[in-house]
Image (tube, rainbow, N blue to C red):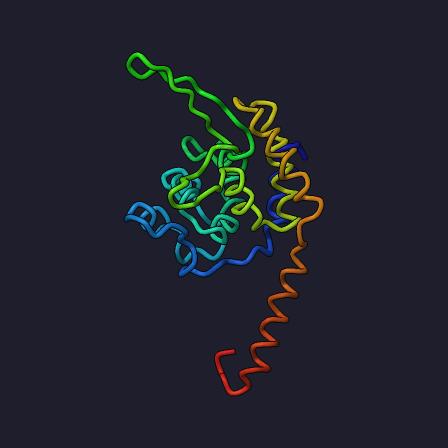
Length: 212
């Protein structure tokens, strides 16, 4: 078994028990019709492995508009398609590494030179999100993955690093977030137990509710 096949197998095993968040909770952003249209093809899909690479590539923008739960559920589909060289536009590596590496770009405008900072220390939008940086947002969004899933993502990113145009971003994401996440994030069994405990608690306090 070659390294690519082993990595794909690792991803499939790590995400085999990842729960679907429900169609009503697939869409993250509620602003504009772009988000709704990007997420629409993923509704009613209970098996991420069943999504054709063509659909993933045509709806590359779904990676930005899926909710955290939706992103968690469909990320392995994008990773497997990427490893199979089946994607031309969708960039799952970017969405797993963006926010952990600073880049400064000089942009001339007229007779002035503006220095634009892009990456982890840049503010998202101070008017709406105050002091939140892109690193803060990345850590929040990517914390949805369990320890097993994070381990598969580490393996995926390490497999992409040798040929990556921006290996620095991959290295920064691994060192700043993913390696620690793969070592200490909650395991899937803990998440499953929490869900079961919550269901038992709700059933106990609502014994006459037939929906619990």
